[in-house]
Image 1 (cartoon, rainbow over the protein chains, first blue to last red):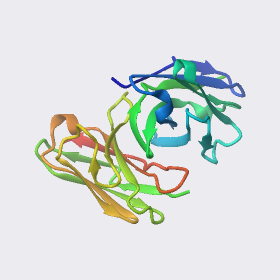
Image 2: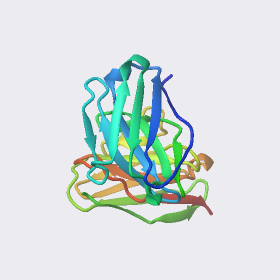
Image 3: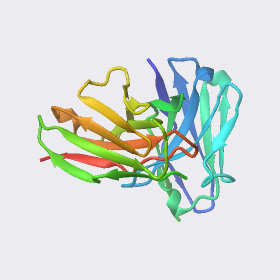
Length: 117
Length: 107
């Protein structure tokens, strides 16, 4: 079955960077896009962008442009999302999701990133 | 960015009821509108895509409709497992924005 398994919770200091991994299984990793979505505590979902594992092409939401980098390692079917210059407003659960025709049809379990001094 | 506004932000209903959640877009998004369900502490789950197409495995009591700027999600014969937060997302133009969510609670 399709499964996306994300890396564990992180605690970071303001100004630091975080890199979240998302390991895919149960399907051909390069045949689907990977989207990243975050959710601050008690808040709604926020779309961050997507990556095409086949080519490595990416699109980042303007809000995150310059701070986010989405990459992949196709040999281990893993996508990564790195966010830099962290502030307290970046405290959130970060999700990866398999995406086809803009439908996020399978999601990782989420990774809590806490930014605190 | 296209703003997505849901109403109500929360509502209470009973098992067996029918409820409707509205999602409005700040500009025309055609039928590029998806609905997700999220339960506490869990990842969202796709229910409906392209306004009205049910994702495989989703019960037929979930019905999506609309176009342009006005969309609805109707849930008939509410079941205990339906009490959750529902969120719309436009995929007409990037960035693909979400509504703020509607929390459906048991009365």
